[in-house]
Length: 193
Image 1: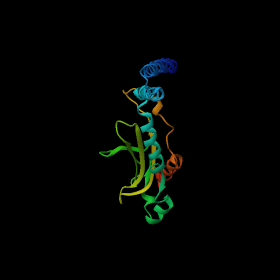
Image 2 (image 1 turned 90 degrees about the horizontal axis):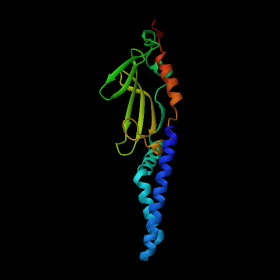
Image 3 (image 1 turned 30 degrees about the horizontal axis):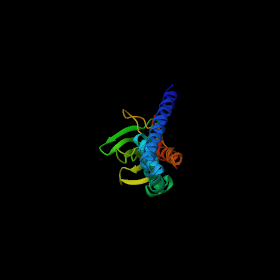
Image 4 (image 1 turned 180 degrees about the vertical axis):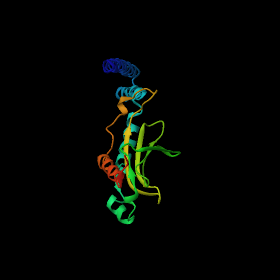
């Protein structure tokens, strides 16, 4: 039902836009002005009244996907165990990880006594709806980042008008591998009953 109402609104707006462009071209013809130039200008104005955020969102999204998004492993669980001999025998983990809050952290989970999974959601700005989801696995004792994943997503949500044309497929390359790595780091040690 919502899709049908959106389609009706788009068709209605398209008819209005076509009518405005047609009237502007007629006006330009009567006055001896460039019809193509005035018609294109009117069309662009009508397009940008509604879809003004499409092109800037697409540009910022493509830039972030190509320069920021990805998955990095700085230390594998085997390397961490080798650098911290005997520590894994003292670690315990739970099936449901304990939640963690901090000022610069959107959400965090304590994987075990030494390791933390930290999630930070960042927005580029309020004008262009592009956001980044940065997830890290951090050693609490050394404050060292062991692995990092950055995903990029677009679109508006909440109380704002839902601009469906600014929703693109998220750049989540490496998210499955990162989730697997979180599980591997979490299960270092023994399960707490």
